[in-house]
Length: 256
Length: 313
Image (cartoon, rainbow over all chains, first blue to last red; front, side):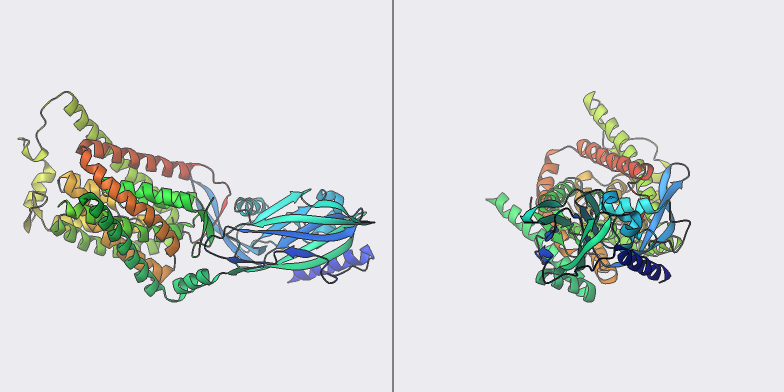
């Protein structure tokens, strides 16, 4: 809580220092297409396009973040000098389920590091909030956390991935394509568009992207969780039926 | 690229890859009388399925492959139901004991590592012995030395054979053409049940060598009887996993079983065309390959030094 309060104060100070009255999502300035995705039978992740309009010469960052929470993990270490085995429990706090960042320029060109950290832009931004509840110092494990999340495609940072083009006199249109893997859980994800000029934040707009379960998916998940025994018996009966059916089919083919 | 979303695993997977994996494992199931869990579970983990879901859903698909294979083998008269039932009773008792053992290991936080290590040791031991034994058989056949069946060899019975003969409650198993004590299949069933629970598989890859080398059953009956025992063991495990851990992904199991049931039929037909030593040496190679993969996974540095907990093996 103290960290969050400190970050909020720092963020406020940075915004105050920016001295700009920031437009906050003025009636559809930021567009998220599609705004939602349903997890159907053939779902294999979501692709969304984030677009908006900024003043010419504005550097842009598009950030998608999922709900944050505690993340309990196991740390691995050498055992008997040969094998990798679980050595301890590690719990990270305030880790978003997904973090996708696309920018039009290198992070250092957008704004000073302190300002970016306050806006949670770049992995280092949430490092102070990502602390170890158990175990040693966070330092050695933080890169491993990023490595783990990147290997699952839940975390991604792409510099120069925001396309910028002329829209109207003095205006640029910005477009970023983001992808969430199928393992990104059903939730409402926060989508933000930041504009920077001369190292100062001049624009901040916000939208949302929602992933929800489709009807079949919701039914199977509910049955598996709430009616485990019935679900298990049905699964076994279907398996035996399928096995015998194929056996009979092959048997009849053999007879003919 | 046809993808499928797996509702319990909560991630996507390529449909053709899943069908291919199911088909391959089904082929092995029909060919060697193994459920294929020892091979399919690591393969599913490799394509990104969480270990707990992979093992539980694998049990469910093994039910389909084993029922298909048991049906095919029972039509050929290759199932010794009397022996299978005794092994099954032992297996259920051993399975319950094994589950308790796993609970103890989980409490110490080393269950996954212990399971992997058990895999490596068991696969290495069984595979090496089976490979060497089959190689001896093949060499003997190549030099055309008449090799009489093991039971007809006129030599002093081994210590193991004398011990087995001394056991009480001897029973004739007509289908397998062996006479052993009822206690032997019951005890072996318990042993296999314990190992099956620890390793989270049907247990065919342990059961087959046990029946061949310790019960001295003929190979063609071993395959059918092993599948019969695996069928009921896997049914028990799948229902328990679904009701207690909620880790059976029905859709995943369904796709896998479509491939595996077809593969099992092909395997059963193919097994009739191959000689016993050829079958055994092929099985030994597969077991040794799985052992190498397991050791590799234990020794190589993981991509990240952090992993999700609670995934079991």
